[in-house]
Image (cartoon, rainbow, N blue to C red; front, side):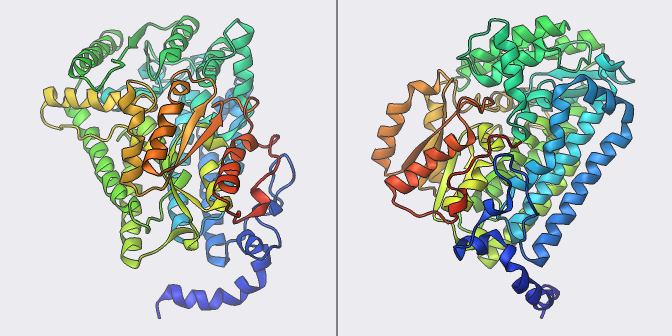
Length: 538
C-alpha cells in the first residue's frame, strides 16, 4: 500500500460524512448541484466547493499561493499600486480574480485539478509581477527607473522577436487594461465601449476593438517607453483601433502591418521585411543594437514549450488527458501572448504537467470521472472565458472541450544558430497569432477547423458566432453544409466578445442547452446550471 492509498483510507469517513456538500454528488442524487452553493445573480459563493478532503485541501493551498502572489505585488510596489487603483478603473476589477478562479475549475478533481492549479498559479504569479512592474514605471503615475526601457507593443504581436534587445523589456500594451481583465470581469469593458461610442464610434464594430479604443480615449493605458509598436492584427477593425491609440498615447509609433494572406510566400516576404523594419525602429528610438545571441537564449525556451505542446496534442487525441477545457486554453493563451519563452518558470510548469499527462496515459486515467459524453473543439475567443464556458459545458452536459483555437497559435520551431533562418521562422511565428490565424487571412484558416477537430477525435465543434464580426458572419452556410457532410455536431455560439449586455452569459449557454436538449435529446448532468441568472456577477 502506497502513501496515497493509505491517506485515502484515513479520509474516507470524512468524505462520506461531508459528501452532502459535494455539488457533483448532489446533482447525481437529485438534491442540488453546482448552483446550490451560490447566491442568485451576483454569483458569490456561500461556501467553497467540497471536492473530498484531499482535493479540497489541495485547492485551498493553491488559493493561498495565489493570495500570496497578490500580496507580493502590493508589497513590491505599494505606492504605485495605490496610485493605480486611484487612476485606473480596470485595476479595481482585479479584485475579482479569486471569484474568477473559483468558477474556472468547478467540478475539477484529481489530476485535472492539480494541473489546473499549477497553470493558474503560473499565470497569477507572472501577471502580478507584470502589473507591479508596469505601475512602478508608468509615466502617468510618476514613472520609474525602467520607464524608458520598456517596449510597449500591440498584444497581438508575440514578444519573442523583441527579446533580442538587451536591457529592454517588451510589455503588451492592451493586456492589463483590456485583454486579461475582460476575462475576469464581465462589467468592466462595457464602460470603455460606451466611452468609445460616446465619441462617435459605430456601435456595431467588434467590441474588443471598441473597448480598446475606449481605454485610449479614457486615458486608461499606462504610458511607458520611448516608442510603441502597433499592428493591423488580427483584422481591419484593429487597424482603426491602432490609429486611435497612437493619436491618444502620443508616442512615436511603428505600425507592424503583417500580410493578411500570410500563407502565401509573397506575404511572408512582406511580413519579414516589416518585422525587420520594426526592429530597426526600436534600435533607432532606444539606441540599442539587436543581439541575436540574446534572442536565441529565449527562443530555445520557446522551442521547448512548443515541443512539449506537441506531445500534449498527442495525448489530447486519447481519452486519457487530464489537461483540458479552460485550464489548457487560458494557460496556453497567456504563455504564448505574454511570455513567449521569456519566463523559465513556464518551462518548469510544462515539464511537470507533461509528466503528469504521461502517467495518466499509462494508468488510462479518465478526467471528470469518465462522465464526458462529447469531445468538442472550441473555435471561440474571449467571451468563453468570463463565462467559464468550457467548465460549465463539462459540468452541465458532459462536453469536454479538448482544445480551443487560441491554443493553435505559432508552434513552429525557431532556428537558434542562424539569424537569417531565425528571422524567417520568427515571421511565420508572428503571423500565427491570436485570431489572425483563425478567423481572418483567408478561407483556409477558418476551414482548418475540420482538420483540428479530426486530429483530436472530436465529435462536436462549438464555433465562434460574434454578432459584430463581419468576417465570421459570411461563412455560416458553408460551414453548416460541411458539418452535415462530415456528420459532425455543429453548434453556433452567439456572443459579443467583451459586451455581455448584447449577448448575456445565459444567452450563450442557451445556444448549447437548446442543441443538447432539442437536437440531441440529452438530459443535463447538473440541472441547477442549465438556466440561472449571473448577470450581476463578475
